[in-house]
Amino acid sequence: MSQPIDEFGSDNLRELNNNRVAFVGATPLVYLHVCDQLALLKAFYPQVITSTEAAGEVTAHQAEGLKAPDLASLPWLKIRDLNREEPPSPDRVSRANMGLLRAALEHEPSIAIVEGRHVRRVAQQMKCRATGTVGLLLMARQEGLIPSVADVLLRLDGTGFPFTRRMLTSTLLLCGESNRLGELLPLTNGR
Image 1 (cartoon, rainbow, N blue to C red):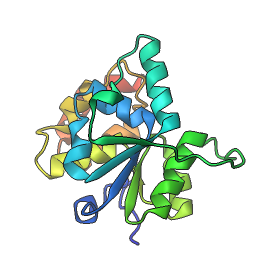
Image 2: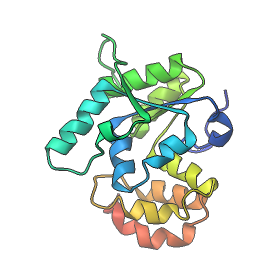
Image 3: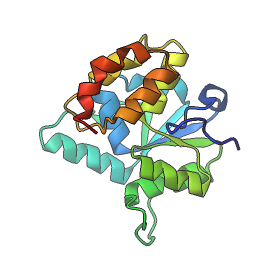
Image 4: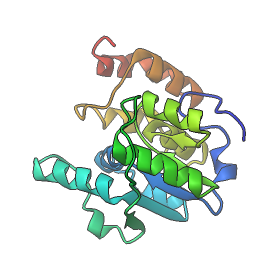
């Protein structure tokens, strides 16, 4: 299995998507919903699954009055019990994300779509293919499904998305939009 060429796990994802299952965490579901890009999951993956625990996190987000998808309205998204009794992760990876990583690992070829560099680092240690919202957006740009990654990222302003200078610089360079860096840097709040 090849190693990702960037921190987003976006290496040759198109070639790997055929007959694959995407195991998606709560946070990417919320972010993709906020920026109106949930349909990318279905566009790239024949099967999209989230865990009951992640679905509960999305529902809790809605209950707090925050913008989150109505998972029942997405017939292509399957909700499955993926969690097992296991000790807590020493790497601050939630039980829901560990369940998604283990499911992706057990159902090769699959991918886990999860947020947090530390979660993807654990996935790499497990030899589990993983990406996040930004990796999915890069793939969509490469395939011509979105005209601009920068425009989509701007829609995530105010959501708590962990923008950093390094992440924005890498992302915009990879998608050929580095001329937009100055426009997006205020999203980092100095990080």
